[in-house]
Length: 351
Ligand code: NDP
Ligand code: ZN
Image (cartoon, rainbow, N blue to C red; front, top):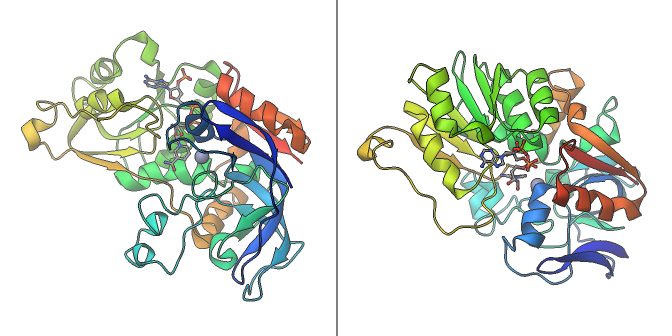
């Protein structure tokens, strides 16, 4: 089969690979619509998960099932499914502890384009199909559904980790597609004031549509200073991080009220340490909690998130700014994601 892969560090391209084999619990899909992720860029051009050779990229997309294993109960060939970025092993000890995303070891549920070949291929292998796939409900288009693989579950997870609740003030650092879903997630969990941090005008515009009450740019000065000034020195209840780097935690901790929490979903592509500012962290006693997590996968969660789209709670299609038709355009979509032009939020390729 043909696939678009990380060939080596700093190099991506087309390769031929053997077709994947379908185990008894698994499914094989053909791609229907696919989207690149900023994480694919971290993987190839920052070497964030180490050097890889001929690893097929991609972990966001919608597929049509072409084969199922003998023990698969709920899916059959012809079904159109959302393929989640994270596909855990549900029988693992980690899953039984409530952390399926770390099944088989830290980040082990992240298989596509990390532990095994990703979805930018003519044939895609899905482990434990009954537990990991979700049928695409009617009423959600293929392009929009691509946002359900990773952007929506990841963005919403930031609010879950930080436990955003009614009336709280929230700062969302980074309003690319992941941060935009953090904004919408915080609004849906009842936040009152939601301040988005970003500079691309298209992202600012969509953040407002998702319910951000204010936006600031990190290019206009230190974001902690800006947030403290906007909140009369008090800071915010929660900080959700979906942009920046290892140094973003310092302003995040400084702008957080005592008792507040950070929910980080940003992929720290480089730098060896995250620094915690001692004084701003209440000399170790400020009750300022830091959570960082990979999005949880699982069929139930995917079905619930899809149901939120069906019932109009969130419209992920607002994030799709660039559309391509044809499998061969995956290379163009990845190039666009790497380049990040000012008018880009998210590209999608319909096959
Ligand atoms: P984008 O690059 O599209 O967005 C990043 C955002 O951060 C932009 O709004 C950008 O502003 C802003 N930003 C950049 N530098 C700074 C800075 N120094 N301080 C504050 N804000 C800054 O990325 P995505 O939304 O696609 O992805 C966000 C992150 O989430 C990535 O690291 C990605 O790998 C990760 N991710 C994590 C997952 C998980 O499960 N935890 C899953 C999927 C993705 P500007 O407007 O100027 O561009
Ligand atoms: Zn991703």
